[in-house]
Image (cartoon, rainbow, N blue to C red; front, top):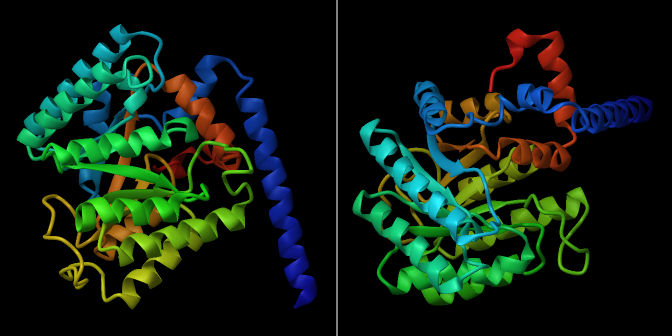
Length: 338
């Protein structure tokens, strides 16, 4: 048995090394090649591309969150572009009767360039979304804007705009404390997406190894569920997904079951019974379909926009295991189903 386990471990190391090599080569390839690889993970450069993807995946029981690619900007003119583009997203969701909400990056609205105007831009969009019964998720960026992003959510709630939630990252040491602080201010109205976090943060403020990151993410899931919050479990890692399934079961939560937590708020429109699973477009489609078939609400993160190249490079660098999927796309293209 020990020999078998050693062989399996060696095989995993070889696959991982090979995958990293493929990714290292891919990010040095011409832009057209990166585009070919990224078509699995990015809907396309236009809103019409995103709508087509959502219509196709709707047949699999998925709901969505739309992200216009782009984040920290250099001028407030760019911020105006993002505001207008997201207004178009809201219109497209309504016109096409899509089960979708919005994911926005506060820095794309000018938060770091002109805080007052950036906040006004965000509030304008959140109000429009609220008028159309749509939810807005504040994507979390690197640690420089963690406090500012959380404060945007709190400010929106203080203005009666409760259709806003935030993303917290499991890898940061501070995350469980953030959950406790937010609970004190919002109670059961808090609405999270919890993920491992894509930004490689300094080791003095974050975990940097896979197992501690997974353990910390699972700890955050428990903290959010125990706080009565709505929890979007955004992970493709089986140790996180399986832990979350057990955590839900231990609390009597699950598909088609009213949220039994005494400290949870009223049922949210277009949401699951206190939780949902969320996955990136093109990643672990089989797992997503399995969860959906079991009755869990599953949401697909659908990015689109002209910044697809920057997004794709970051995804490749973040997840070197994509290398094996790249090879599979070449050799077995009929299996390349998102």
